[in-house]
Length: 346
Ligand SMILES: *Cc1c(COP(=O)(O)O)cnc(C)c1O
Image 1: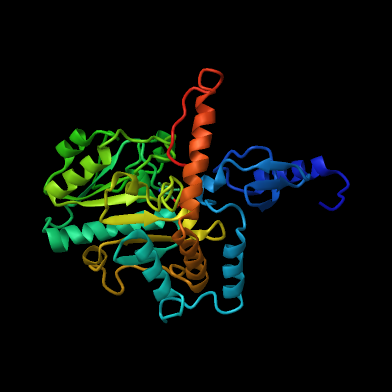
Image 2 (image 1 turned 180 degrees about the vertical axis):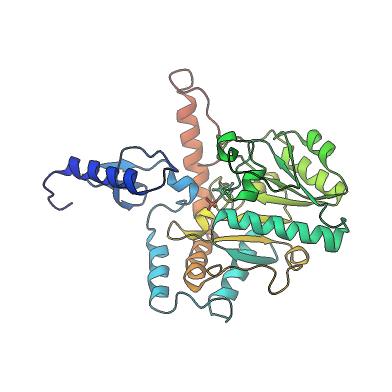
């Protein structure tokens, strides 16, 4: 840090600006960050902190991973935005590489996680009407209690968190909520009108809730029996966080659609996607869905660099070994200020 006259008052002034000029949608800790590298962040007063939050898993590679920064810089010097009215040279390769990494057949790039979830819901509804034969406007999507899938009006329509919902109605119909971790309750809620079951393989925002063994395989069976799609929201659990590319990989379960986001942007910019079966994503026709920024050249270049980092298995390995160490050492502290240790990988 360069010398600044009154460092603490600078932090206080910046917090005042934040409180005076921004909508109060968060309650941040009184720390004003200015720089970051790897697992470390530095505040405006030059204090260093180990970042355990990792951007809610958007920073799976740490802050400013050199290969991700290089990919972004190189793309900044070429082209950053074309709109989807044209092809560009990063788009096809990104979609192919992401599909190959995730064992899927087709990719729909978007920007934020919530947009990926919204997109998956739209695709599942159209698939239900055009392929499954559900009567018009009768399709249902079954979701789990305590879910977190984003903040749009449709997504908060099926939230069970009062703070996320209160005063934001009227809500979008067509969602059914069942308890998380209970495949029998799910089976009882699924009908011939069920387009999809939307579930987090590990509930992140709910407090890192790992479901009971066999639950996700049970969800897959329920979907197969009912002819419903399984949509796995891997926005937080995916891309190496738990030690595998997808958290569902631990259970040897395959979803029909995956929503990806957070770490897909490498901590540099928002990049999200729906990846899945070609016969499902293939129901969308030109003009039915889109995004000005989705799949832009800069996003695709960063996303390709993320896929490259994940293709070696090094990050999955590291999440596994560091996760085991962290869980063991935290486990030793249970009863001494630590109530419980939950999670998978890092
Ligand atoms: C963060 C998150 C989202 C929403 O992503 P945004 O980029 O904040 O819109 C959706 N689903 C899960 C599981 C998440 O953790």
